Image (tube, rainbow, N blue to C red; front, side):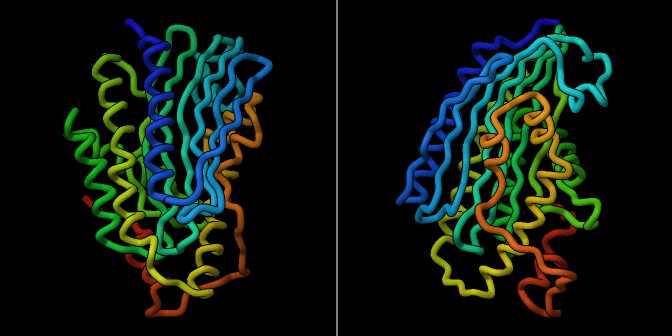
Length: 296
């Protein structure tokens, strides 16, 4: 089975990072991304781009990385023992945005390519984490991703939506991180077909997210909404530090710690045994938006 061309994959990811950053800067209207280029002693490096204290985004990052080495870290071989001892190359673009306004949802996106020896696959996805739920927003996000999937295979969206619901779930809380999106990994086979889908899915991120930003960024909010946002950000931290495979792989493979933990919010709070009051917008998030639904 032939493999994708590494140069073509890398060129797409670098261009994706450029285009996404340009679109987000235009939406923010105030701040710009600052770039740190970094290198990894064992092989590879990347471009970390961070935006902070903007008109919309309190903190966010859009990272490109490409790393390679002689052996894989334990996180990559635990479920794939056949990869042990194989030389590897991994590259991807990963994004997390934490807005100021609690009515603008946090969002995550990651599109990646991996190969070890003769084994290769594509992975990726995007998911939405609102603090105050709007059905219009959840449906728009999911329908945009569904359209991208349907352009290549009508079976993709239901499969990858369900995968996202399973993956972005805090088992110790028995609750979803947000309203989901799509998530997929280990896609291998006809590389031209799969790469075309992977690129279409990545290109759907800006049209899925930016209209939501425009609808919500000017909604007035107060201290109550801000404190709920900070509390719910704690769930984001818990997921990324306890469950996220990308975080674990990055740390175990000797990646740049500042870039890996870029996804964490700048401010966050935890309250002991806090419960939302019945009938409030905060309760509606738990009752109407976090349970898995067919948004599309």
